[in-house]
Length: 443
Length: 87
Image (cartoon, chains in turn orange, green):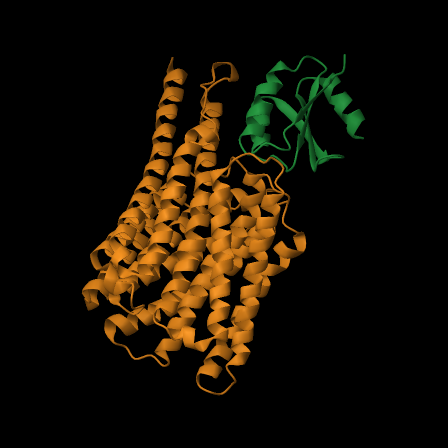
């Protein structure tokens, strides 16, 4: 059973995941401001330094930031395997990831070699330390749930991606010559998007979709095989792609493998949409809207990806990789992560409040704790969903017609600010109820 | 009067099952036990039950994936009734 080891006692302090969750929208906001500052130039060329900065602000500053927080939170409760010294460890990783991402983005925009060196050191330390700590925790795991298996593969992909990223940082920042730089960038992108982000989203979905959206369980054969098969395909694809690039192998061979990976992601999207359509209670749920948009975004990404393979003229258009990245990141990953946050954050706050008053109060003198729907009201999350959806649409329009870039940047900034407000409001509620519990315990 | 109280939380989303069961157990009378019907094993509930002086027994359900039987740890009559039903 997916939640077989879900344990209240193992839950780390609330500050462990929350420092990551509250920082992530701020990086989203920074990315939006960069879009406002340099939008027309960056949206027309994927190699523009501001575009590289924007991509990393979102992938490291938002996506990886939330993933770090979620993993440090979920590992102890799903796998009954606590992270050692959670507050110290989360503080170190949070600071190094934040400063490393800022250095990298500044290094791209301003071109300072020392900024790139800082980024390499901070991000390298953050990733390798994080991988080490989580691996230590995963080794001691008592269960073998599909989510745990997916976390292991995603972590492996993160390790590959981090090594590639550090190498490319040396290339960009220090001018160290690397063989096949364009191919290394392609590998970095693929291992990051497909391996680290894609596999982790799948693994977390295997637990949180049935648990929070009251859907039927995923088919066991899918949860057991899909993630390992995609990882294995990615592993085989890597050398074949290099061989094809140096004309030692027909290009169709690695392309067939990428089509297989696309098929795997499409199966995940379609099965998730299917079980969500058969959920046991068909009540309105804004997180379902985020998930549905995300899964449709994933299917669109795969379609655009496959079309690019079949129609090489389209793939050479400079706008093609920007639109493909936009569909995958802003169309799939960001909505799904926001949908997860709107379930995980209220649940954690509720769990901690419940735990806190059980520790210090008798049942008879309990303080009324808000339920999940009150911690982040549906109306606020729904409004933020619409702002995000409009921002996503406007960003696509802005790629095609640059004059829309300012309105896209402003709407995107509003969306991240709104998300930050909703998350911070939940934390404020936690603090005010905690104070009431403390006051009651003293009286 | 039956000693068995049934609480079906199998279609409720997280936090509601825990809230409902915590609200229901204080009203258990001598000899009574609660049978909670759930779609997954409620691990966060167990340490709370221990803390509050209740015992539990979990088994695969007939109509839902999981049945959790809960009784006051000091209530031998309720425990015997649970053991008899789940034998």
